[in-house]
Length: 84
Image (tube, rainbow, N blue to C red; front, side, top):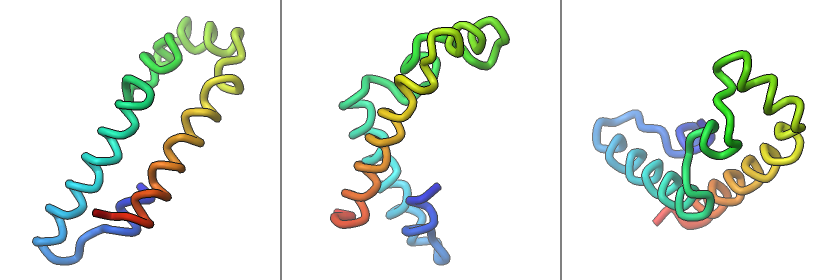
C-alpha cells in the first residue's frame, strides 16, 4: 500500500512502473523470508479459529510479526531511495 501511495499511477504508463516496483518488493521479501503468505511465515493458518488460537497461544504475533513488518519497511524504504 505504501508503495502504491508513493509510486501509484495516474497515467496508464505508470502502471508498468508500479507493477515492476511491487514485483521487486515481493522478490526481495521472498528472497529474505521464503514466502509472502502469513500461514507460511508463522506456520499457522490464522484464517481459521484453530490456527489463530494456536498462533496466539505461542505468542507468534509478538515474536514473529514485528520482525516481518520491520523487514517489509526496510525493503520499502530502500525502494523509496532507489526505485530502480
